[in-house]
Each structure stands twice: as structure tokens, then as C-alpha cells.
Length: 285
Image 1: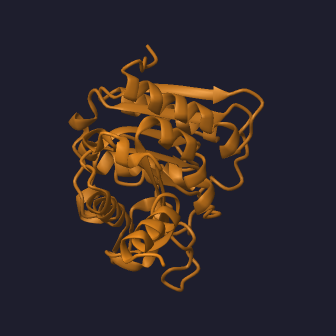
Image 2: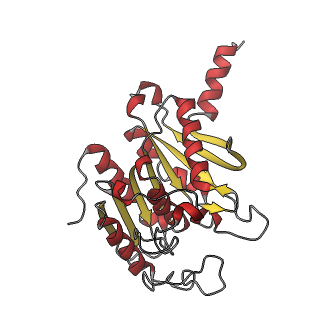
Image 3: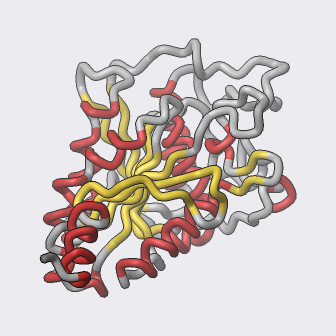
């Protein structure tokens, strides 16, 4: 007969390590997350474990964003946290609220921080400094989160965002960082970007513009919103340059013959995170 201790151990092995089940977020039960927890975590130095937040795009392929880092997590002492932010959460048809950090009373950045705290408490690891990756809509989230919370980022990888917020204190929030505290509820201190490893990745053939040109009347339209460039290629370069101007240690990887496909660029992000962990990261000159 299986003892209670053995039952608990079996439950932990099945549901709380490796690929986990999906948990509702304690900060707001409308949102949830799944994890990949290294099966060897008990043998690892948990004081050095890093939580890697992997943020989905508009299609909300949550499990894919977890699984892309599963093997990496096993060999690099990371716990992967993949949040899910459903579309239409307020019943208004909006698919993009999470990308801009705030949607009415919802602060998506704070929800992610509490998810990380919840994971850190459960597995006795630190959430002080996070790895973060996001592609497309997740790239929106990742670079804006980094602007708002640079002190919580160990390293960030921004994949092919369609609409960018430049690290520019002279342009209003969404276009730049001016007035973020009034709109989002969090001030931006661009001096904290100095020395921060920030990676940018995109397919070199990712050139469609139909989804990323913001027209007047759109909920996130404001004057200048399209000035960072016509295509994702131009916009990611404008974004990278704006971070670099404030001392971030930036690098851009444009993967040949790839369009808007996360699975074909993710190896560059894994290499970036591994280089940061190993102390071998070399930013662009």
C-alpha cells in the first residue's frame, strides 16, 4: 500500500516537476501560468536558479512558449514560467491588452511579478532577477516590461514586436516613455538600462506590415506611433538603437530566410541566455 509520503512524492513528480499542470494566478484568477521545472532541481544550487518568463504572442500558444525552453532549463538551472493572458478578458473583444501593460484596472506587469513570486516561494528560489522572452505580442510585453522594471530583469530577449515603445523620454508613452507613470502607473528610469543585456531577434524575411500599421481610430493609436519604421525590421532596429543610447548591452540577430516564425528564431534566444549565464555574452559594437 502506498504511504502518504510516497503519494505526495508521486504527485510532485507528475504535476509539479518537468511539464506542470496549469495554475491560476493568485493575484488575479482570470489569468494562469504553466511551468517547466527541472527534474533535477533537488540536486541543483537553488540560490542560482533563474526564473525564465516566456510570454506568448497573440495566438496564445502558452505550452509552446514553455516547451521551447524545457531542455534549456534542465541544463541551465532555470524554471520556465509561461503565463496565459486570454483575449477578450473584459468582454470588449480586445486581443492586445496585455501587450501594453495596462487594461483598465489590470496591471499585467504586476501580475507577472506576482506569478514569479508565487513560483519562487513554492520552489525556494529567487525571483529578484528574471530572464524574459517574448515574440510578436510577447515581444511587445517584454520590451515594455523591461522599460518599466529594468531592476527586475537579468536579461531580456525581444522577438519581432510589431509596435514598439522607444526608450525615449521626450516622446509620450506608447511612442516613448514620457508620462508612463500617469498612464500605466509605473515611472520609467532609463538610467537603469545601463549594462543590461538586451537581445533582439527577428526573421530576416519578416516583412509583412498589414498587422502592425496603426490607423487613427485604433485603441492604441497616437501621433507618431508608426514613426519607428514601416516594417518590423525597421522597428526592431529603432528599438535596439534607443536602448543602446541609454547604455543597454544590445545585440540583434536576424535569422536568414525566416519570416514571422518563433520556432525558427528561438535558438538565438537560447544561445543569448546561455551566454549571459556563462559570462560569454558579447553585445554588438
